Amino acid sequence: MPTDQEILELKQELKERLDLVNSDPEYEGANPTAGDQWMLFAIGIIVPALLMALGWVLYA
Amino acid sequence: MPDKANKPGIDKSTIHQAAEGSWPVVPGERNWGLIGIFGVTLSAGIAAWSYTIGGAVSWYLAAGMGTLAMIAGSLVGMYFVTLAAMPVSVKYGIDTIAACKPQYGSRGSGFGIIAQYLSIVGWNCILIILFGRATANVLNAGGIIGDHWVYRVSVIVSLATIAYVYYLVIGGADSVRDNSVWIAVAVSIAGLVVLGNLLHQYGWHQIAAGKPAYASGDLHLDYTLGFEILVATVLSWWPYMGGVMRMSKSIKQALFPSMICLGMITGVIGLIGLYASLATGNADPSISFVKITGLWMGIVAVVFIALANIGTAIVGVYATAIGLKQIPTLQYRLGWKSTAAIVLAPVAIIAAFFPSPFMAHILTFMYFLGLVFAPICGVQIVDYYFFRRQRLDVRSLYDYTSNSKYHFWGGFNPAGFIATAVGCVVYYWLLNPVTYAQHFPFKWISASIPTVFVAGAVYWVVTRLVVIPARKGGYERYHDAAAVQPATSAEPAGLGE
Image (cartoon, rainbow over all chains, first blue to last red; front, side, top):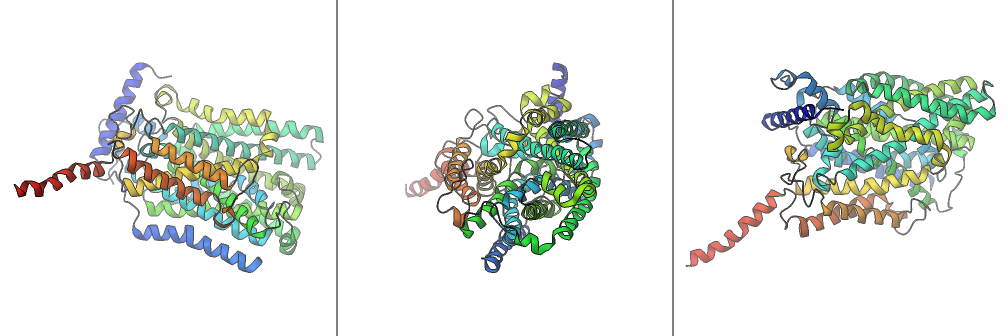
């Protein structure tokens, strides 16, 4: 278990890390593009809807 | 890209702590390349719980419709998890629990920790118990142990596996990545061997002719039940998402591993469990696999299950341990080894003392996953995309004082909890996880999908009507708009004077 001194050091290190995060222009990655969102929607919603419809048509 | 590890003031031990702990990971440390992410997600996705999921689907659906319902359900479930949890983790290098603080509050995120902890404990129980049983059944089939030793051996093997997983996990993030790559390769090859043996022994016609054991007689309802099992279970990837994806370099790099290697692969591997169950009439893969393969191929199957389960378990324990370190007390008072032990201890207790009762209620566990994680996804999607416009204040994520933008009221955001509670009630109404009773319109819209939407809508309403007017939660652009509004409306009056 860390000592109080080590905890203080850890908190200081976290502060330094957050300072680094806030000052680093490269830190924030890009948001998903419209293309990413459409790709996700196609794979996650459209394809499953087609599969379910196909299953119903073939087997029901 | 500059090497942040070499910057003054950020020494190696700090980097190590941050990578293994809960702190945000900066770009220079996100060193899991495409192969690493694929390896980690694939080895996590290819797990023996998929056999259990497939076995559960075989209660309602035959092979043809079951195949399509499983793949469709796995993709839909993963869509909501990916939309809710992946972009924020990749963008800010944070794990899932940190990412849910803007919705539940700096202290309320403990709810996410509990959900994560319980779900991964549950899944790891399934993984470990299945492996123990499969090993004991193979040894029994080979005449190495008698019937009366099967239970004892299964428990001993389960506990030994837990010890090995613990050993791997305490190696940290590098250990997870390094072990996952070779596990993924071996698991993929072994999986094909087992599937080939299944088709060779029984043939597709016999598998396709297998009858579901508990079909209701209403094919539409059974189709939705099979679909829902996959959606609900795949939603439980939510806790894993941040711990893995925060090591990814970009959203493009993470999207396909998330959807395919975690999501769809759960359905695809589950097909082996579906087919095995329909062919043998036994939904327990630890029994059906030995029936299918015989002794020697059964040993291969056990090796396959071991590789798959260990790979998944170490990723799960790693992600949960990171989540637990979001609790301030654990973050500073507990070492990595102790945190990993907290994750594995309940698994060891259940595997040792309650394996049979636990495995008898697997479907209840699966539906509860949907009941809990579907509302969480709905809340997170609405907050991150509609209210925060994909921007968080990272400093506030690690600030537990009232200065944090995510402090709300005493560290809790009532909007998140009310919306989640309403979502749980909606799910419970549509599909009771305990009795499996369902109500209209479950047959038409399932349970998890409407729960995502209802929880998100309730969150939107409560946030607009209560949280934003109270100037809580760091919704600055709404506050700014409110501050500007009176001045704008007063201006004509001033001009008039």
